[in-house]
Amino acid sequence: MKKILLILLLSTAYNATAQNLHLYGGADYTEYLGCLDCSRFDSKSIWNAFGDYGSSFSNTSIWNDYNNYGDPNKKLSPWNEITNTPPKILDDKGKFLGYLTANTSLKERSLTRLATELVKNYKVIPKDLGKWYKKLITDYSKL
Image 1 (cartoon, rainbow, N blue to C red):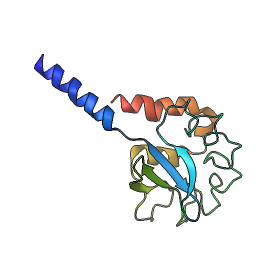
Image 2 (image 1 turned 135 degrees about the vertical axis):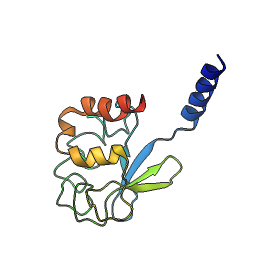
Image 3 (image 1 turned 120 degrees about the horizontal axis):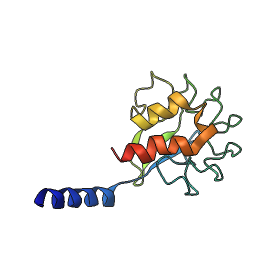
Image 4 (image 1 turned 90 degrees about the vertical axis):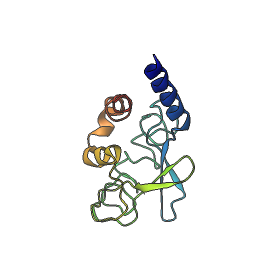
């Protein structure tokens, strides 16, 4: 019984302090590009196909193939393999957690499972945001 209570207490403490991950891009990193791990129904989520950050038609979405952030040939895109200016990942308090980038030689690129999977699958993820959200955020957080 004590073990169960301790696990519950630790789990509650972790959830109370868990922070969301946010993307910022642009030449000066002031353009908000969405929340990486928020609910897929959150208007700020990159997983919300109807929001500014998840729509494949939005100028602030990494899923838009025709903007500065979704086109792998643009220097601000996380999918560009040679860029030195990919989006930054920050927590709620503004702490820098690495770059979301396909540039494997960039020193401070994020090597988290989420960042790695986003980069590896960026072409197919927008075709089914719900499935990928479940796979990368919901199911993974249960492990």
